[in-house]
View 1: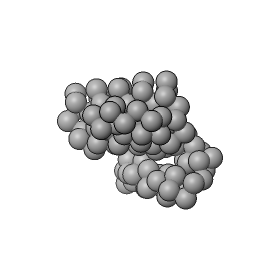
View 2 (view 1 turned 60 degrees about the vertical axis):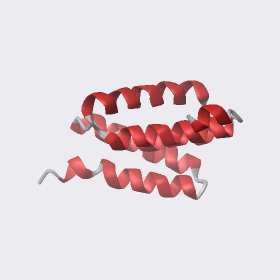
View 3 (view 1 turned 120 degrees about the vertical axis):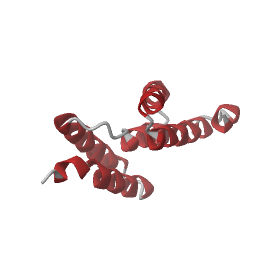
View 4 (view 1 turned 90 degrees about the vertical axis):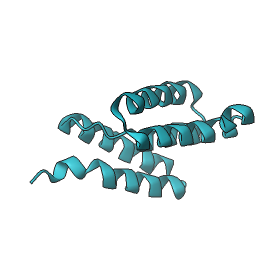
Length: 105
């Protein structure tokens, strides 16, 4: 029935709940599952949980690369939500690193 195509959306919601509850290991597991599902079905849903998880962990190198890639994909494909999530991740990352001018941008 094509329901698999929608699976990345509830996984993103579940991953957000894990993040907000401080369950970073659970969020990482959900992010891995979401990435696997997206690859299997050819989904272009933005890697929301991975973006947020990397930002919350302060993993600058990986977060910056994924943020840039997500912003480029969003710009090319007209997926505004991907860009919004990438901007949010950048703000959280840079606030956590004490780089407030970059967070504001």
